[in-house]
Amino acid sequence: MIGFFERFAETCFHHFDGKVRYWMTFNEIDNQSDWRNAHHLYQDSGLQLDSNVNWEEAMFQAAHNEMVASAKAVIAAHKIDPQLQVGAMLAMVPIYALTANPGDQMLAARAMQYRYYYGDVQMEGEYPQWLLKYFDRKGYQVPISAADRATLKAGAADFLGMSYYFSFTVKERADHKVEFDEHNDLVDNPYVEKSQWGWQIDPQGLRWILNWIQDRWHKPIMIVENGIGAYDHLEDDGHVHDDYRISYLRAHIHQMELAVVEDGVDVIGYTMWSPIDIVSASTGEMAKRYGLIYVDRDDSGHGSDRRYKKDSFAWYQQVISTNGANLDDVSAE
Image (cartoon, rainbow, N blue to C red):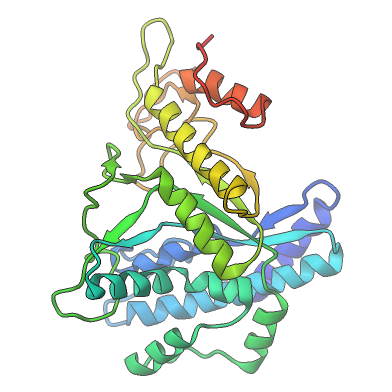
């Protein structure tokens, strides 16, 4: 599969050379970290395993193969055209400690390590020492050859692509283990609101994680997904008044601006998610809408498929036309 992916990437690089400069290899590869909630199908790697298989060990093995494939793609791109930029892509979620309790703080630190070790490997070309110790302690056999290590180092990503939607919060486990279980260790953050699907709405968390990334990997960052899923109501006159989406995007873009202007973070691009309503990958629902454009289609597949500009469409249009200089409300057409 690694060889297949390398040839696929080379084909794309040749075919679109001169048209596409920025590439990303595996979308949100770190979502595999929640392997306990994978329902027998890991996100990103698509593994289906028997109950007698150690799922976590298999996840680490699959992720390793993906990251070697990614590095080979980076190397291939640079040979084809030195101007091509190939990035990793992570779902970035700040993981806060609930309190100043050292146990909370330690678990939060380990949670960030566990969820984002993929970035250490892809951005720096090296496995972190804590994870190698973890493999030893668990007895995991994840073969990482000398050739793999050389490939990972030579094929380190040029930039980080990232999605940002929400933040997590953790508190010390009852068993005091410093091991992160994303499916069971999360608690509510009393300082932020939640979306209709229970996701913590945390604009300042975007600035926080941008600084964290810059301090850790020291490479350019491209925000390629940022948005809010919500129940949108289509009025009889064809309007969708989604002021909540405007508020969400405005607050997050403002925090990105602060990260760039005040903190010096190297953000090279921003695209919201998403221009048009589609089925939400996180829940499989059409009802969980992210778009600036409403699509008349419900969860059962019923509807005319007609499309309607939401209020957020006109707002985001002027955000783009002013390059983010004007985040004020505008009247929908």
